[in-house]
Amino acid sequence: MLTDTSKRTRSESLFKHASKLIPGGVNSPARAFGGVGGTPPFMKRGDGAYLFDVDGNRFIDYIGSWGPHLFGHRHPKILQAIEYALTIGTSFGAPTEAEAELAQLVIEMVPSIEMVRMVNSGTEATMSAIRVARGFTGRNGIVKFAGCYHGHVDSLLVAAGSAALTLGCPSSPGVPAGATADTLVLPYNDCESLLAAFQKNGDQLAAVILEPVVGNMGCVIPTPEFLALLRALCTQHGTVLIFDEVMTGFRVASGGAQQLFGVLPDMTTLGKIIGAGMPVGAYGGRAEIMNCVSPVGKVYQAGTLSGNPVAMAAGIAMLNLIRDENPYPKLETTSAMLADGFQSAAADNGVPVTINRVGSMLTVFLTSNGVRDLSSATSSDTALFSKWFHGLLNRGVYLPCSQFEAMFVSAVHTSEDIEQTILAAQAAFATLKS
Ligand code: KE4
Image: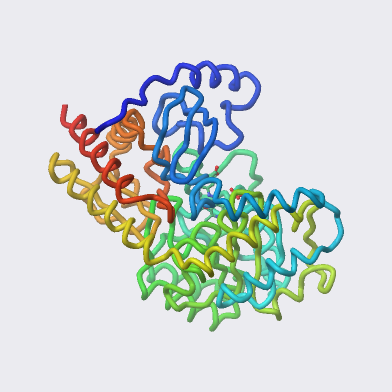
């Protein structure tokens, strides 16, 4: 039975009020509905696979805070760990045992990481990894790929994905030319241009950074040839290969995309799931590289709240949950059921879609083309996507508010939730024909 969640008057008044105080009424542009229009629901609480808004509507949540909630909202073991941490304090600015405990878990779980440094966000992680790669190699050049998003780092805010792409500002004003002069942007999955770039500039390249499964132009999957060539060229030229696993880390496998695909980077950045909803990022890699980081080495990076005990407790609980419960088989089954359901619902209504999925991250592109890079992703009909998005939102299903994002299934989404979602998708696709 379909639910009607179209009445959201309190969210509308809150959005008007917040917009006078905070740019766009949000603390991150991705939440502002800029790509789909309308008013974002203001959420009151989350529980398991659901979000509840201030108007009393319940939504089946496929954002999961943009990735962190692998086990849904308010998992008891994560809450318990946070509650205990609060009984001993919030932050000391001194080393604690918990930081070493989370570091140990990350090193054991992520194949290529020998040493790791905690920070407070994915952006801090990628910003720091780029600096370390430049310090380690003594070079300046970096390669990124059009449509990939690595946080709002000056040198990487070029042809960026996520909300930068959604809102039509993939290369942001305010970033001085000097900050991106050493950044080379290539098409994702394009072996030819990668080879040419290395033949021309290989020995000036400090790093190549990529999302090893892209979420930020929607879900885009690397070809095995592309990953293999990347690895080979970086090895050949002494360039640091950075897998930005802020989204894919602990999401597509316990060891991230590098474990799933069997390709080991030199450095890895992490975020989202590692903090279980608390602000945690991390960067790590070969000990030889990480020993360049202050205070052991000379590459400076610091943070008042990095490794704070409350966030560490949440991260430790999350990674222990992953090791104890191994959610991936169930995530695969539930996510495949969801993708198949979307595919049939679209076909039943004559709506051409392309669905890309890796494990529990997926995107329904409103296009009949295959989607393998930014130009094919942007061939999607974003106006049609917006209509479909609102059709689902008004029927109790909360997808990422952009064609250029990935949705996430959690380990606590049930088959009933999936069936309910497909019913809503069926009805929403039907409205696209009118
Ligand atoms: P944060 O600084 O937002 O923690 O992480 C930046 C980042 C880095 N790398 C990847 C692959 C990422 O996906 C992100 C952040 N992702 C976006 C959503 N696609 C976060 C949502 C937002 O910006 O509000």
